[in-house]
Structure formats: C-alpha cells, structure tokens
Image 1: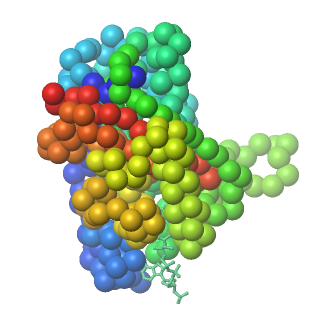
Image 2: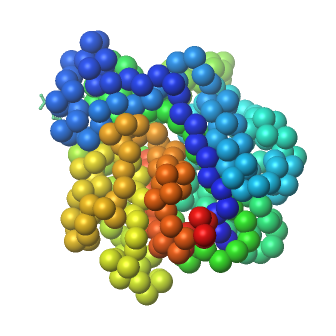
Length: 319
Ligand code: ACO
C-alpha cells in the first residue's frame, strides 16, 4: 500500500489561551508550559461533515482520482451530530462516492487503525483505492467549565487516499482495557424499562495516568515497528506522533535519544484534534514539501480505550 494524496480542513475560528482565560480559571502561561498549546481551531459556524468533505476532496484531487473511483471509505470519528447514519456515508454523498463506507472509533489512534484496515483490504485485493479519513470535534465532548480537559482540544479533519503499491512496511495496533482513565458518556433517550437515567458525562480524563500510559505505548509501538523492519531509530527521517501534549512528544523523543528535527509538531497552533492530529500534520508536511520522496516515516498514536497504533512507510510522493 502507498499514499497517493492527502488533504485537511480546519475550522476558521482560532481560539487562543487568552480567550479561554476570560471564562475559565486558567492562563496562557499554565496552558502552554504544561501542554505546548497556544491556540486551537474550534467549530463555530461550520459543521464537521463539511470539513470532512473538504479534506476528502483535497486528498482525491492530489491523488488524481474521483470519489467514484474509491472502493472503500474508512472514517475515524468519535463524536459528531449524527450517531447514525455514519459520518463516512455522509462524506460519500459529498464526494460522489458509491463504495462501501464504515466509521471506526479507536479514539485518537483512529488513523493508525484505519490505515491498518485499509492495508488488509488492499493486500487481499478486495479494494484498490481507499479513503482513510479522520474527522473529529472533541470540543463537543468537553465541559467548558472543566479546565482539566477543554483547554487541550481542537477540531479538524484530514484524509489520505491509499492504493496498491510499495510504501508501507509495517503496522502494529493494540488495545488495552483502561476505560477509567479517559471517557465520555453520551446522553441517551429515556426508555421505560431502564431503571436508571443516562444523562451522559462530559469528557473525564486522569491526565497524569494518560501521560504515563501514552509515553509507554508510544515507545513500545515505535520499538516494535523498528524491530519488525530491522531499522534503527535514527534511520527514520520523521516521527509524526499524536499531538496530545508537547511534553509527551518530548519525553518519547528523549527516551529514543533523537533530535527535535525528527519530531515535527503543530500542537502549538491546533491543540489535540483526536485522530485527526496525525493526518493533519502529515498533510502539512506533504504540502509544504518537507516530506521528500524516499523519506522513512513513522506514525504513532494513542487514544482512549486504551488504544495505540504505529506504522512505518517510505514516502512515495513528491518524486
Ligand atoms: N489551568 C490552570 N490550572 C489547571 C488547569 C488549567 N487549564 N488544568 C488543571 N489545572 C490545575 C489542577 O487543578 C491542579 O491544581 P491543584 O494542584 O490545585 O489541584 C494543577 O493545575 C496541577 O494539575 P495536574 O493535573 O497535576 O497537572 P499536570 O502537570 O499533570 O498537567 C495535563 C495536566 C496537562 C493534563 C497533563 O497531565 C497531561 O498532559 N496529561 C496527558 C493528557 C493528554 O495528553 N490528554 C490528551 C487527550 S487524550 C488523547 O489524546 C488520547
């Protein structure tokens, strides 16, 4: 499998830390020193489906194919206005695709899970062209009175078109049962037979525990992938990690004894857009020409569950 097009779309509203400190007991100093975040984009007058369609169309344009040539759409999404139909079905309508569509929820690891699934379809010959798209609005799961969570997140969408070819070398996804450290419970309609009310709980996160589990999962994933491919850590040109916290990225980098240039980031501008962080950053590096043909790239992410995923590929665009 190889990537032949990427695209992303962001909400227009940039919300700075100062804007948050108007209604929250927080400060720019606290947020950027603990997380690396200075601002994030938040959906105000757009909707997630439209952003997703825009990201998908940009990826298709770069790939040089139309929506009707897709064999599958895999969309990573945790929450959006519709529970059903799936967001992938809504996206299909916007790009004139007629293929099967499925949403997956692996939280922030969704891009890695989506690529892994796409690779399985492509390797069996069941599909040729697949759109893997991540569209997320985690800002709709947070309580905007809870400074522990809402300052961390932003919204966005990004996609990659993958097809048959030589690029992907290894992929490893995992899941561990740790629901108590990070969760969101949606409100449900009352049912006359249910004995308790299900009003929903805004996102809860045990930040310190997530930090530890995230670092361990990222290191394990990267070491596993390097072992599988026989490469050393310094032979990788770029490590594109989930943009959850700059301190997590720095801790992983320090444990691998690697220079900062190998760890591009955009968390300072966009915050944590859940599974969209990795494909947004991938698209930025692609469009800016930073990724060169033949570069070795590792993607690694972690998310609620606790899920994690890492993959390694050779960049086959921009020849
Ligand atoms: N502004 C000001 N003070 C705050 C804020 C805020 N936004 N948030 C928390 N505080 C306070 C706390 O209330 C606490 O006050 P107290 O000492 O009076 O009780 C104090 O700051 C210290 O809180 P800690 O939780 O100890 O702060 P910590 O240094 O652990 O940083 C953070 C918190 C940034 C959440 C950190 O734990 C972290 O980054 N964890 C990883 C979480 C993560 O990356 N989540 C991403 C989402 S999950 C995902 O993508 C899979």
